[in-house]
Image (cartoon, rainbow over all chains, first blue to last red; front, side, top):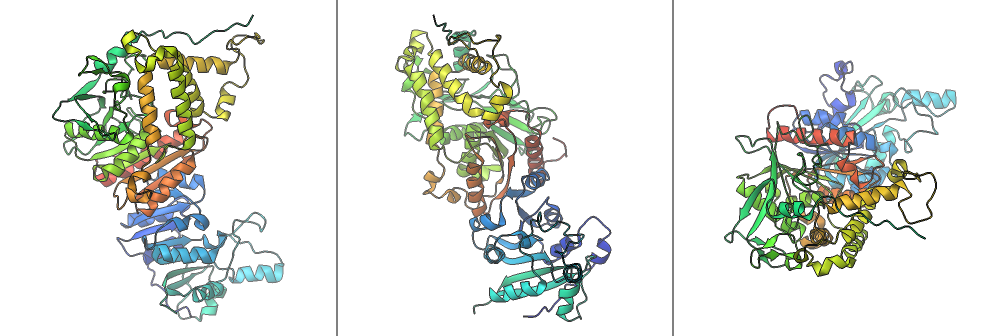
Length: 220
Length: 400
């Protein structure tokens, strides 16, 4: 499978100076108004607030108690839970979209989590930091140490991120478990989409993160 | 010689308490023989009465009514001076001007549960058929019975849908029963430190309390009222045991440690040498001033029987199928009576039902009783939940 399509994204380039995160805006653009959404690993609820402001029925799961309580104090429907263990409690087709924003790399079983996302939701939106990003490669190649960036400042020994992957790796996983990629976007270090007309290995090199709209593939 | 000082007799006379049972100093709704209360045990209770308090005013749309459900030993005096003890209302931390449940914003109702002893019909009431106190002749009641009676009161008040039903512990059980029995009548539900079923450990503690009451020779097989006495020693022991379960090891240690009560050295007796002993004795003796021993038996029994899933084919999620009610579930880290795992099971069932649910576990060392205490994070969450529900309900004004 190849990466085919980029969303036209009005406002993202200028949005980086504002309060809303570029990847959140991108995710919000992918969700149809009026739909029901579960945000897995919703943090302090910034994305959920953005979605609810657009008339979307949003729910959240968050691992940290502090995060959950801040969300609930914002009036959001968020429960304390763990993507690895609690997604099994949700029935099939419970949501139109299930979002996993910058959390896949912190799960113990990314493949199982991804399968659960597309069982619970008819569509999934997954974003993750691209470990194939040129700065990462350079740090490992030249510096000889595990990469650290502005967005991923933790050292190897205290990071919560235990399953890093590249955009290429993720595409291969989607192929392996028969997941269809409906839209794919790579964002550069400034949250701008990497231009559409470049070959996809450029994305894997210059995309600081990947954002994917996924649906269940047809039968094999 | 070993000094023994038993639990002191109550300072408030039995007359003060028994007067409240039939003639409460609060509002009362009477239900005559044309409106019996159908109990789960098969008995139609009639006539009966419900004592209740209200705070604030019902708006023109009748859309701002909040029902507060009290816990095992609570009553309708949520936010006013208690007529028997003279103490402040039991939930003035949550209910009042500028509090999350503000009477300027909501019409707040709290009724004494059926089976209680503060004005709603219960075992301490006069049985109109005999002219004597009901005692153990009173039918065994359940949490669904309590809620059925509350629904009749809400009907009487001309309220179709409650904006919110709020309660902790046994009150939380009633909240959940409301949503399972009358989902279309509950816009939002705030269930605190509770469970959808009473655990074996909790049933065991209740049995301990009941046996303490029954072991008191003054209990007379529940017929003490006719003799003008009250098994206050047995009830006090029941309360002491229960009170320990409402706290936590850490809270007891912080509050009392091993400190001595008004002395520096042990007296080598069974007097209350330790502060914690003195505290428990006080809890026991002050409780019996305001509570009826038989009512304690009946209400603990109602909690023991509570199991929502069992009423829905063993599947909890079925109790909440397609429910539109907005839920907020709150638990406390040090609550070992209704631990977070119980709330989590409820949340899983609500998720499976597609309900809109928020769930927060609040860190505190104050045990089960935390829901009655000044815990700012709990208030912030309650306030935000009610405000966001109020917005969805179209209640005007941003305060509260």
